[in-house]
Image 1 (cartoon, rainbow, N blue to C red):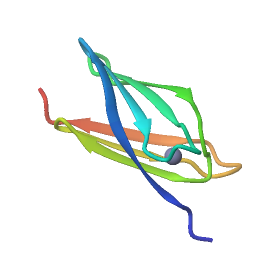
Image 2 (image 1 turned 180 degrees about the vertical axis):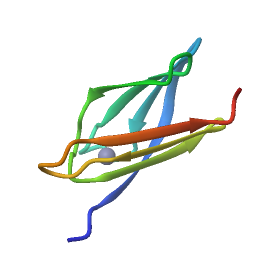
Image 3 (image 1 turned 90 degrees about the vertical axis):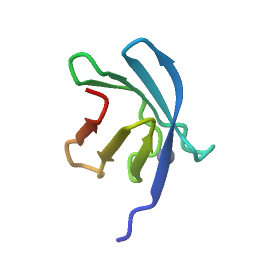
Length: 80
Ligand SMILES: [Zn+2]
């Protein structure tokens, strides 16, 4: 089964906190990343079956979510 791919965009930036929103209106996935301690908080899970990619402002975000599988996620930042 091919999972849908959604792109995420940086919609809000406050200090070290970055908020990303999925471009798909029906999905609405929203994440907050704290660049200080590499913490990633899912505000709204959105469509859990979709793969979410996003890159903007030197930040690349890779989030993989599959049904019935623990969400794995990693992100990297060039802004060090
Ligand atoms: Zn999405």
